[in-house]
Image (cartoon, rainbow, N blue to C red):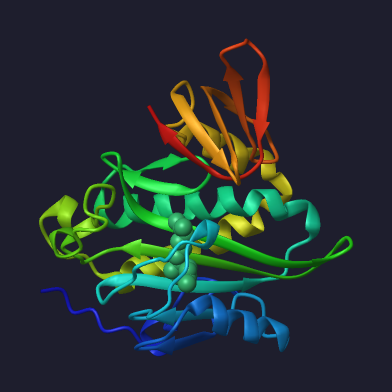
Length: 258
Ligand code: BTN
């Protein structure tokens, strides 16, 4: 059993960042880290302030879904104040930070499913939720929420077992959540600081997408598109070649690979 107690001190001590994760607010149990991070941002918390919970009771996912985050998972939200031009890159940045952290700590090789699910062997190990408050051309704040399945037995969660995995299920051993969190915070900061060169983030994210070249069905609101995922644009949208030969742009939503 890996010694894995989370605390602000354990997360921040000698953390090689200048702002991300330098202030950590930790809860053993919480509704959703998104809520506390939002309150912090509204109060003008320092950029990089990070809310971490051992367990969320009302974790939320994209498109109003519930996010299950029991003991053994990672649930964290980071407060950021980016310029508006960088908003599209944050989804890419977060997925890459997760991928790099998993690779560094475990040696596993994750993939990204458009727009920002991180998969291992075709199953979801991490979900990312980016929420922002924007007024005109000014970003009041962004909350970058990351949920990762670390030391979970998916057999205990039959409702998500067919589509989800955890690092411990993949490796057959437990992983230090603390180590993953510390890598993650470092990677978020490194990539965030490289945003003025958003092109390299876009290129790497595009290269990691398992979705490209696949027949997919994309759902956005009430509309469903079927086609071949041909590419992604720099604004993060998915370019789908439909059966009539036309190219359509899916800005947000979810895809199912056929
Ligand atoms: C998704 O794949 O639908 C996104 C899931 C995002 C879950 C994380 S866990 C930390 C943060 N708090 C939440 O309530 N949601 C995000």
